[in-house]
Image (cartoon, rainbow, N blue to C red):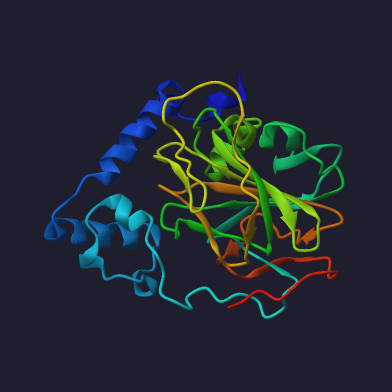
Length: 288
């Protein structure tokens, strides 16, 4: 029996990309506030979304997508005082974290996959660390830069849209390298190389980036392509992008850049908390 068969038949049989685009369209539909507000309250209670930290009151939202991509109040996610600390890029939970090994990283216990397949090309991280974060439906869906640095290249890697919840991660081999994703490559403030893959998932209408025009899941096939070579300076805590529903982030650091902490699977995360450290040479303080 194929490992994929451990997922429900409906998930395996459905046209996952088309279904996700359809759900994204539903999420954009405007709903009258008197009807949407109570529905969002039920949703928040069901999935544990914190309504007290939102930048806007609940009655101000006009669609599900408006709520899913909400901003938080200023100061809701403070950054570490230590400028060399790596900040968690998003709310969520740890899927897997640890050291890279011969060009592979772990998706889940006993399930490796290749880094070059994840990033859509050569991956110079044979000696380094990785960190994977899962964003659940109730989480804050925007993600932020974990360190200061420079963004050199953005790749779009088309693919499937399997779910990325823990059960699916344990069932679908190479899931993060099979799903559609946006890959950001560059160098940290100390010159070490990094890669960050924002991974799409079932019912994620699209992945969006804040400073580079990109909208995934538009029905285009083909192989990996370079979207942009922007040479943009980025700052720890600055918004990187957002998911139009929950999904996952996979981050890679080469050894000379620093290290992610090997936190246990399932560890809760809040955007901004320290999850590792850069090598201190040439690390400058982040504002904020």
